[in-house]
Amino acid sequence: MGWMSWEVFRCETDCAAHPDACINEQLYQQMTDALQTDGYVAAGYTTISIDDCWESGTPGVLRRPGEPLQMNATRFPSGPEALADYIHAKGAKFGIYSDEGTATCEGYPASKGYEDLDAKTFAAWGVDYLKLDGCNNDVRNYATGYAAMGKALQKSVRDIVYSCSWPAYIGDDEAFKPYEAMAEAGCHLWRNWHDVQCDWGSVRTIMNHFGNNTAALKHAAGPGRWNDPDILLAGNDCVTDAEATTQFVIWSILAAPLIMGNDLRHMSASMKQLLLNPEIIAIDQDPLGLPGGRRTKLPGSVEVWTRELRGGDLAVAVYFEKPGKFPLAAVKVGWTPLLVSVRDVVRRESLGVFRRDTVIGVESTAAHSVRMYRLSRLFGPEAEGAVA
Ligand code: GLA
Image (cartoon, rainbow, N blue to C red; front, side):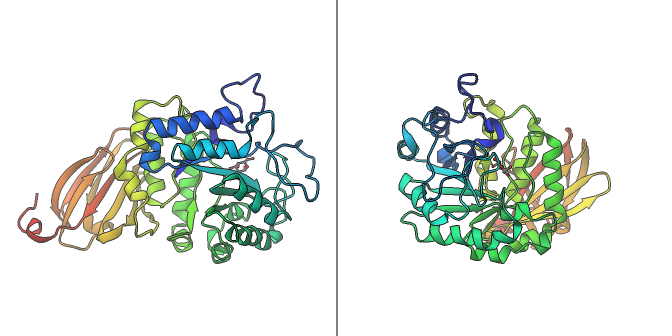
């Protein structure tokens, strides 16, 4: 869980024209401040990640053999170690970006052939998380390249979380992607597919891709090896609150990394409350570590998504393409015990205890919206008699 700059700040390197929105040390310091002060660190969002365009060098010009990567000294005058110290002092972690190719996606110097050197450099800087992108390479080189960086990180003096973009560059068929090889290469998470863009259509496309590939993607992931459907949009004006909530909820069903892509200095109260919702975060971070997926797609554009949780609990999300109603009976979404305790985790209120075949009327008044429930078992005296 954390925050990453790409979604909002992209590759803005003109700090004279955009002093508050360019890739420089001040941006990451301010985001770290907000992450800590506003309670995101305490909620679990610990990693502040720099994306592309931090590197020194000219886009399009290859790095000189043997030379370590360096940060752009004009935009990061205090250097990477000082930035790492700043982030660590606020109880957060330092994430960085490179690419398993000859250049990053924006053309800056990258790591192909320099995996050992770069892993050592990142460790010396105090890096805790590496996103290794896959631009400017031949797909046939990924298996060796991503494994080389994985090995180099494992030898490192620091524990560095390793995010691989390998699957995002090898097409649409999730059943044929070599996820076992990625886990063996040391990847702890991987960007499976397309970049999310700041609009609802893009979120919906990713949701459909994960829904259509539920079986393969459930198989691919588990504890220590997570699917990453990309950045959370909550906090940006490009989506409605209902749409941002849908993305957050569906991502938690998928056991996705919760990585925010917003401007933490300017957050609405409602989106801050959503991102800090401890009950949805608990579903996302459930210790059983099994990802869920789309269970049913019904005529009228209602979808039911579910995820098994520790202790026999079940997370259920009902998605509405347009305002509507849906009769939810626990037994129809995979619940087997006779009784079920139902809690609305978005609104944070308990609905009561029901028999598994009792129909609960679920209603939505907004387009692209979701309702989410946590179904729990009842134990001991609670289980006797208390049926709504
Ligand atoms: C690719 C990645 C994005 C981002 C950019 C940076 O498009 O998928 O997430 O890292 O490169 O150039």
